[in-house]
Image 1 (cartoon, rainbow, N blue to C red):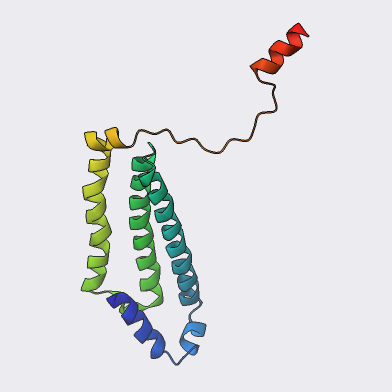
Image 2 (image 1 turned 180 degrees about the vertical axis):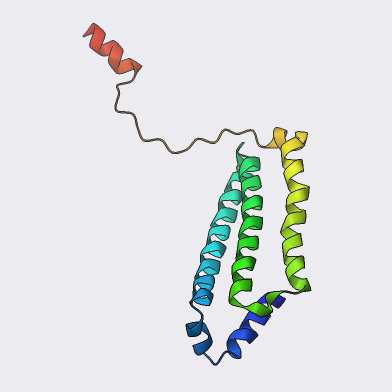
Length: 145
């Protein structure tokens, strides 16, 4: 939350919209952050569905989400530090450590836990279009008819 307040203060002191207009990287950064936040929210909704329906791909998807969240945070921080030079500070380290510690705790648990293996047992079946080939009953009728 402190980083957001710092960004808002930077934009306020930049002379209204002139500060954003002078830095096209900052404009792209804002669009990138909006897109990544929307993608993370959609990912959480999908993970919620997989979790509550106890699908067997939930642990793998959760691991991918945790790794992606951390990678996106690092990428966002690097691009933001190029756009706004006053970004380095102790709160930046804390923002890196939270998802990292979360991943360090949850990834081994999801991979090794017997409870996870016993809970998420329902097969995930992706949507499949109906087959155009006749089924066994139609084939049997054609052979006898």
